[in-house]
Length: 158
Image (tube, rainbow, N blue to C red):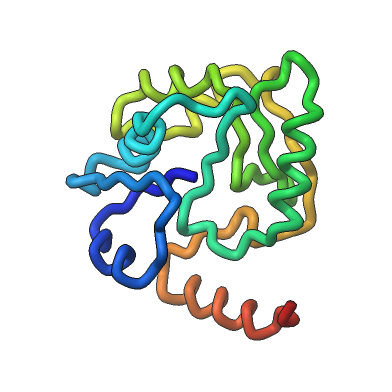
């Protein structure tokens, strides 16, 4: 597991046990999300099976959804190198990528959107249709965070 921390790195590290996790920091958070992704990939070789990109602002993803996507990724067709969830026709997260795609991400400019890799060749993308709206919901605004809190209160405890 790799984690890239930005503006609140010290606060996050003081509140979360990150032992056993490869951690790096982005000094200039204004360089864009792709800079953070590239920083994570630069921590070392990608596992032979591939890697997962899961932005922190897509926060209410359930483990069952990740398991479904992982299973689809591990059983994908040879021509497929990207597996993404699709909710109501919209692509979401987390997204699974075959290991060779790490080089394509590394070649992106820091301010280029990572979705360029997904859109580059639609034939290599498998969309897993799922009915889990939080797979496409970012927590960017205070109202988004409040909606997420309300959702957490509705969910049963396990």
